[in-house]
Amino acid sequence: MSLTAAFRAAKIPRTLPTECGEASAASDGKKPSAGAEKRKEPPPWCVYLIASSRIPRTYVGVTTDFPRRLRQHNGELKGGAKAASAGRPWNLACLVEGFVNRSEACEFEYKWKNISRKMARKRTEPSVESVLQHRQAALNRVETCVDCSHLQIKWHSS
Image 1: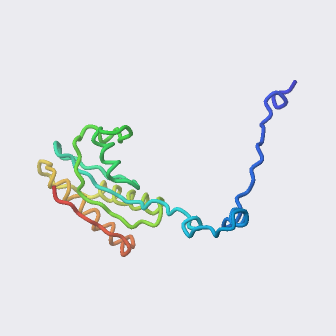
Image 2: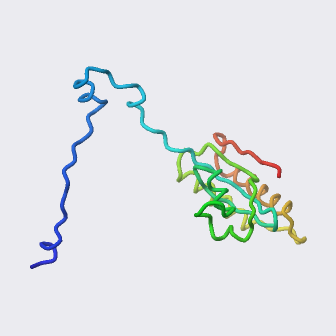
């Protein structure tokens, strides 16, 4: 007996959903509600910058739910980035909103991190303020090479 004969994939036939609720409207005599016709909007993507309140370190990331993500980074929920565990607790420094999709947000995040890495740093003892100034200078450079006219960039003071 061949392996394919022993483990045949059983395909379950699916009925296609009716368009705009035609069958359900015909069966009960009611028109479908306006909410049923609308598709659920995808969650808005944002890029965030968080700063450690203990050590001079920052972290840039992408998410659709920043409050949940910050709780993950701070260890309150499972799933925070391993790279961020050393800097706990984290505070929001900057939030960039208005991305069309995940791809655009990830591209922005990559450029911000890449420019930040390549920029020269001051040769003084690092502090939270100097690290944030470095990230802000990098963000200013990103704004010159990427169209940011549709984005809302909000800096938060700690």
